[in-house]
Image (cartoon, rainbow over all chains, first blue to last red; front, top):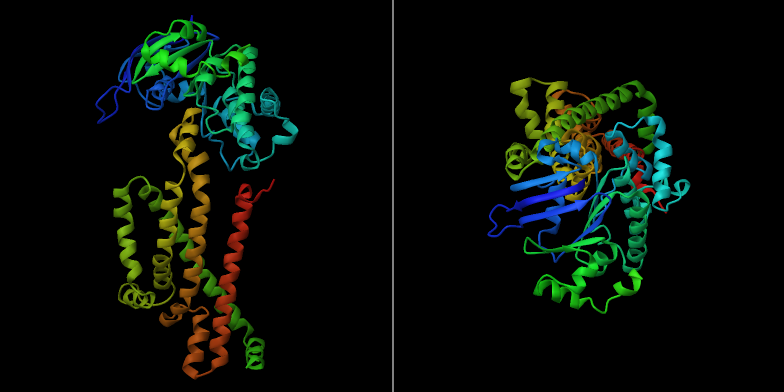
Length: 253
Length: 214
């Protein structure tokens, strides 16, 4: 079964001339790591946010884990889909543990198990629970904060994780190591990851398959190798050529 | 002068304590009512530009009226004593609380709300767990200003027979006893500083996260 199915999905913002997302069709398999690549304004974030109904689609249907999302309560849908944003969005008035617990509470997890789950999640993102549990977000570096953001999104073991440029605000060196770790997290858990990025290297490094978008259209949706060897059109070709000499080839090994 | 003051304190202890007590009761009652009105109105006003204009306009107008004039204007409606004094002080304390509440709610960043929505909080939970805690520092700062303003203006309440430390000051002025006037003034100044300090302590306890260090 497919984890996410986009069927003729469209979105047009008020007062806009063109579609932000224009008749997108795509099937994302269960356990797959898919990246959405495109320049800003290409509709990639809109597509992602329509998946957990932070933005409502105008036409077409989106299916998550076999259910048409318009038939679900949006709040309930979001509780079962992990969501990570570029600005991280940890609550500054809560400790790291409380930031994760707030999500466990939404999932009606028994309070007795909080500590065990929180510690487990922190370990999963390579943070020592004893060091971090009781600190406030302001005491953490950007990279550490986003690790907590990931841990929070992973709470409740959602089948689908949506990540909106999760490393966009993180310095280049930390970003590389976090990308690798995200890849490891995905391989360990075999959940479906959908990640939006404008960084070509990131998209090709992380994605089992890559969706290339431009001006609301899905231009190509294939494995990095196929996209490089057989770009669907001129736009994709230029995009790929611009990253020919990039580190991707070395990193992918 | 100082010895005169000290001897006045020694001989008029109970009277002084009552004046201080009245002064506190008046200002704190005003703060309480002003907070309820200011925070609720401020919350709704923060929702849109239009609602802000509708809510804050009457308070802006009232703000222009000098507090003494307000007290005297209230006499034909409410008579003299405690009630009109608290009413006037409440009107005075509302604007800072109202405006700070509006700013406090407005300044909650959009991405915080997105983060809360994205994890599956409903509107009520977002308000309780994110919006209110994040607006709280501004609201408390507004309440602090409101209290200090009410406390200082409560001096005028003596003019309409509501008691408080104003009695001491106006008695001093009437009898040309500088010691009483200065003693009253000093007490008001010191006690309003004290009020501010207590507020800061409360803020510190409520918002530990603002004061943590690495």
